[in-house]
Length: 140
Image 1 (tube, rainbow, N blue to C red):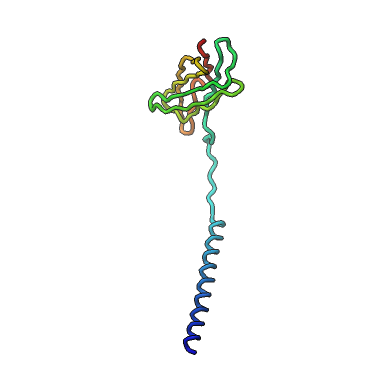
Image 2: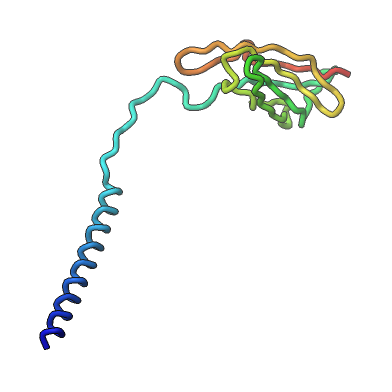
């Protein structure tokens, strides 16, 4: 009999320990959801990247849909490529290529534009392209 009583007591303790561990686990989980959060202060910097607006046209001045525009940082050789929309415009080229000068060229099929150079001017928050808009004409 003493063995049965000891075994029953041990089983009772184990059940309490399991319940206690479950209770602690649930409490910790609940505490994570109610954790204090710091509010971020408002920032004067723009959250979105500044983009260069590039319009691609034919020699006759018609806008070209589906033209590929590639901008390459002349220092790092990193490139961004975009495709013009139905208006012949892409804004895929952005300030991630800054601050070095960037070479921009467009192509559609066998037609290629002359390369244009864009300089990015940066402050503590963002970089702005100069010029802010390019029109690339595909060579006939």
